[in-house]
Every structure is written in C-alpha cells, then in structure tokens.
Amino acid sequence: MRAASPRPVVIIGGGPVGVTAALLLARHGVPSLILERHQDIYPLPRAVVVDDEIRRILQSLGVHEEFAALARPAPGLRLLDAQRRVITEFPRSMQGLHGFPQLSMFNQPELERLLRDALARRPECELWSGVEVLSVTQSDTQNTDAPDDPTGPVRVTFRRDGSDEEEHLWADAVLGCDGAGSLTRDAIGTDWEDLHFQESWRVIDVRTSRPVRTWEGAEQICCPTRPATFMRISEDRYRWEFRLADDQNLEGPDGWERLRELVAPWVDLPASQGYDFEVIRQAQYTFQARLADRWRRGRVFLLGDAAHLTPPFVGQGLCSGLRDANNLAWKLARVLQQGAPEGLLDTYEHERKPHARHAIRVAVAVGWAMTGGQDRAAAFRRAVVGAVCRIPGVTEAVSRDLSPALAAGPLVRRRPKLTGRVLAGTFCPQPWVQHDGRRVRLDDVLGDSFAVLTAVPPTAQMTAVATALGAQTIHVDDLGDDGTLAGWLARGRADAVLLRPDRVVTDTVRTGTGDFTDAAAWAPLLHTARRTADARPA
Image (tube, rainbow, N blue to C red; front, side, top):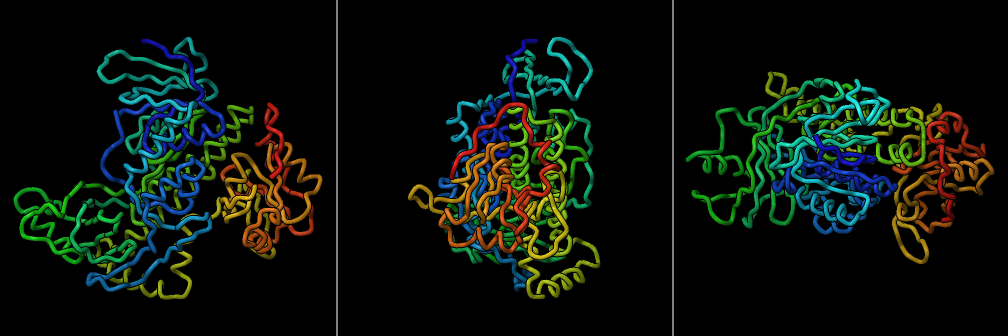
C-alpha cells in the first residue's frame, strides 16, 4: 500500500457540493484535494432549480456573472388541477433578499462546468478524477492501524482507475460529498431517519423547437391518478416528471405513443418521432425523504445527499447541499488555519440539520397534499390546500419559509422578542452599494471574514470585537445604498449587527444599548490561538 503526503482537507465527491466546498475553503486559504470516481462531469441534467441564497453563494465563488448568462429566472410555482386550472400560485420575486431572482432554472452540467473551471483557477484546489475511495478511517497515528479516534487524523484509502493497487493518504478533515450511497456515511456509523415519503417517478428532459404551451414558472399538476411536474429550463429545454405505474414504461415500440399522450397538454407531437423533439434523458427515480441521524464524527463530515434526501417538489435538493458547504467551510477554516476550538465544528450539524429537516418536510407536504398521494383522502387534501392558499399572505409565507432563520444556538444569539423583527439567525440583505466609486454588491465590500455593520458610531466594544475577529466595521451611511440596510436594522430594533462570513447575523446591538450583550456566549467558539488579520476599513 502506497501512502501519499498529508492533506489539510480531502473531499470525497466532485459534484457541485464537493467543488463548492473546495472553492469556499480556498477563499479562506485552506488547500483541499477532491477525489472523484468519474473521469468527467456527469453529462445529463439532474438539478434544475436554485434560489437567490444559492445565487449569493455562487457570487462568493466568483461565477455568478457566468451563471446569470445561462440561468433563466422564473416567476414561481403554480398548482394546477387535473384540467390544468390554477388552484394557487406561489410567486417568486425577480429581486430577492440576497440580491438575485428568487427562482432560477438552469442545466446542471453547465453549472458544474463553471465550478470546475473556477476550481482549475485556484492553486489551493486539486482534483483527482477516476479515483474510487475504499475506506475512511480515523486513527490516532499515521504509522499504525490504531482504533478509530475522533481526535486523530483521518486515513482515506483509494484505488485509481485501471489499477489494483490500494493507496492511502492522511487528512486533517474529510468531507463526504459522495451522494445518497455515501461510503463516508457508513464510515461514521450513521443511519437514515425515514421521513415517510417514497414514490417512483419518471423524469424526462427534452430539447425541442416545437411550440410548447407553458407558463414561465414551474407547474405542479395535482391529480390522484397522474400527478406531474413541468418546467421550462431554458430557451429550448423542458422537463417533465410523471408518477407512473410500474407497467407504464416509455420504452419499446409503444413508448413514443405513451410519451405523446403524457405531454399532450403542453405540446403536440407527430405520430412518429422527429428531429424537432429530442429526448435528452429518461430516467426512473425513487423520490425519498431521509435524514442522516448524525452528520459528523471527529473530523469527518457529511454534506449534500450524503446527509439528506428530499423529494424535488420545491427545488431544494441541490440548494440544501450548497448551504451545507457554505455553513461548514468558514468554520472548518477557522479551526484548521487559526486554531479555533473544536466546539465550533459542532455548530455545523446543530444549525444545518433542523434547516434540512424543515426543507424536506415542506417538500413532503407538497408531495402529499398537493400532488395528492394515492389514498382516498387525496381529493380532500387538495381541496383543503386550495382553500388555505386563497387566504391572503399564505402563499408568500410558504415561499419565504423555505429558508427560515437558523435555530438559536452558540452562534445565533436570540433574545426574547420585545418589538421589531429578530435579526439573529437571519441573513443580512444584499443591496447594491457604492464602493471606491463603483456600484457593487454588498458582499463584494464585506469580503470573506466577519463584519460589523452599524448605523451608529462604533463603540469601544464594537471596535474590540471587530479587531479580535479580523472584521471590518462598516457604517451603513457610508455604503450609499437605497436605504435597505438602515431600514433592515431599524425594523430589527438594532444599532449594529455582527455578520458571520456566511452573512448570517450572530448577534445584535439593540437600539440604545451600545454593546453586543451576548459576546460571552459566542466569543469562546470564535477565539483563535493565532492572531487574526487586522481589521480593515471599508
């Protein structure tokens, strides 16, 4: 067995979640190695939807402009009955909290190519393709086969394509981004929690120049016998998803006629297949709702589908995985690069697991209440959903609730709500601002570290906090925005906020108090053994 040189971080899986994690770590100066079993990007479309929070993450990776050129903003989701009459609509804004459209359609291989190109530009990142990982083991020494020890380095054993030789390397941390069949999940001894949804659906991706009768958003057909999802992905690409019985396959001599029948509400097809309707992919998928019962053991972590599986009805599968990477990367960097305590890493699962569970439950609710399920109560549930969604404000609340505030914890200091909105655990909005004579997005000013955003002159404590964290202190009046930030602080009854590198509010200075009152709770987790960078002026 041949051993390679040690690595700070090894990432198992080179899909969008693994590559995003590597790029985020690189922004914090942490080198990583990605081990990917395929030789190249998987060429067929899978995920097709991201929200504005994910667009903001892509901005931090430096690929948002290229992504904007290939993405198609969409106005939301409609629920239709079997006759395609509108039951209700969930609108999505073209300018969300994060500064981007709240719903964007795209082709996943194109996004993955952007991410791979960005990866190639980062000297901190390395990708080994055609590598099969065989085992992940935590040991207390690099020279023996000692029992697993959560405090020790992690050994990764792998084999390259075309070779029978086993190799291994050591890592300070391993990120399991290796999908639903994750070897990493088995290695840390976790089990699935069943969230009670499993259905078999046929996914059909098409390119066509034929006229298609479509709304520009996503359509969910609520029908007990043939529920379906339809969406336009780009100028000439479309996706249909149908729940079909096992004997309703689309292969064989009668397959084209069955497909014609399924898509007839949207497009008229000739009796024989022509060049102007190309089926790019047909695949049978089992939509499931599952959550790993533990996401971490020592320095081994689960991200993406390795940690959670969701039905696709609200488009949060890939989004949840990229949120995992955004939450973990800065914390891991702070531990590895600056000597922050291990307890900081405990907040990853504490914050992300409830959030992922919520997204899955919303998707399951859509799957059962809106596509109806297959039991006798299906029609009743759809009628109730239609009635509830006609109540003013309900559909807007459901759309907004796909990304709720993080639960209170060591890095989210929530106090009893007296007046105004509670800001801790929520994202800072991202308006356009003026900086060095240029119009830029807020995050381009904030950089990669913590930031203190204030509407009042900084107090001594604010300055001390910023210096200790290597954070900028920025007065909102100096940003030249449209009043978004000052209004946001005022509604939260806050003079200032402490923003984490992922732009979540950790703590607030309540109006008139002058200080972060909960600093004693979060400061020990963010304390570093090595001096952070000096705070920089905006």
